[in-house]
Length: 315
Image (cartoon, rainbow, N blue to C red; front, side, top):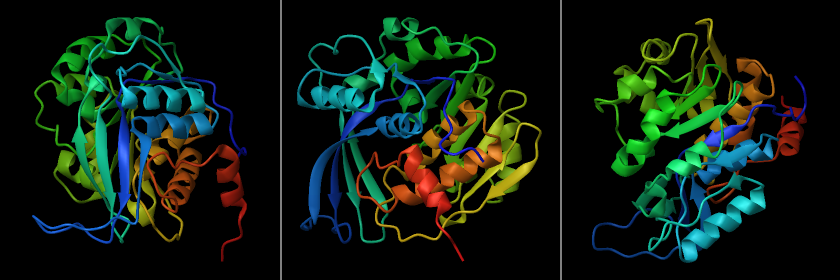
């Protein structure tokens, strides 16, 4: 497997960048209760996590979403700049970027409470600023489907993507499977990337192999399905309909926030660099294993860190 592969295609990300208030707690308090957090800090999060993961693996990344005025909008722009992620457009007037309270308990599980802001808008000029080309990966978040004004601009653009442009769909935890307009979008999707729970909800079965077959039938021909399965690694249904299981890595989990995003970003970067599905999944599993050992949302490792992790001897 090539070390730290260099990506050729671009990631064009259409989801939402928000600001996380990340807190570490022992457990959620009961209704009306109160607890003290072990740490609290503001971090750039949301869709930023996927983009940062891909960028740290060498993939050129463009953010096509909106950002707001105010403190959070400035934090979002600074985070994008620091990662070398291209973006454009002026801040949405009179609206700040949204935020999310991200609570991580002693088991490493995270709970989100979100407030939407400027990121729920979509400027048409931000979509026409970049011309998608064959080999690019356009990323769609399920969260975007819940923002009517954004979706009205985004959906026709996605359906008109040129041939050879990959469309990656991450459904996210909010249920959108009953959305009447989802079928048309799925028919253009070439990579469905979610976790076990999201796949079971969408496909109506707990069997991962069966779930992948159900999902693949809704997607574009010769599509891929990627299902994250926690410590068990991930399942993949490849373009030729073969099933791949890539083992996970034994690791002590401290925070699962952003781990799925790290997995998706590194997997896409691997495909863009020419890795096959199994190799890309192997690197993505390593990236997620590293990410869960770190507190915070955008904790994806660099390509060099993934190389070093994979080179470690394991009994």
